[in-house]
Amino acid sequence: MKFVYEFIGTFFLVLTVGMTVLGPNSVALWAPLAIGSALAIMVFAGGHISGGHYNPAVSFSAFLRKKLSGRDLGLYWIAQLAAGVLAAFITIYFKGERSSTPLELNYLKALLAEFIFTFALCYVVLNTATVKATSGNSYFGWAIGFTVLVGAYAVGAISGAAFNPAVALGITILNLSHWSNIWIYIVANLAGGAAAAFVVNRAHSETGRRSKA
Image (cartoon, rainbow, N blue to C red):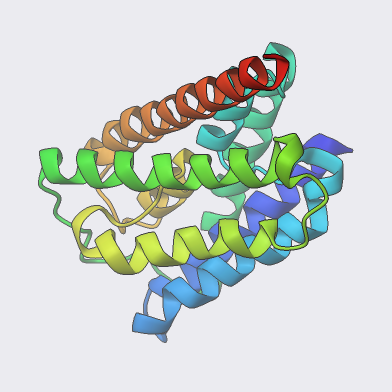
């Protein structure tokens, strides 16, 4: 069931992105609040089954943290990307059309923005949901969801604030971003996830060594 849960959570995340950002009747400056809240809700709902990743970059960071097997990583990616595609086409069905004004990106700025906030997202996920010191906490979902909210407000105009290859695929299908931009999200998001895993692995390895001294 964990793959089904990943599909469901990613679907509702990408659907919320599409329905709040794509016109007509977008919610403009309220969109990040809806998107961050949707992610938090789905993390609380599915975290106990699948880990509540809903993001190939988060799954990659969990894999590097040795919290996810290679087989499961591949299946998580399939479920997440398939959910992003379905959510995008249902959004088009509801809205009636794709965007006519895709975001024009400065590649270097977009890469840096996506890397920084994907790092932040994966760093928060790993520190609130994969370490003993914070196990059993009641706030992990909101911490994760509000990281996306903050990132969307901070750099949404620079990169589109995907921080997630499944979201990037969805917004590309919706023509909110050009197909020629999708490599930016893949590279920056996976690199951000890898960097977060490196930092958290080092921090908790050092904590373990100190506790034995």
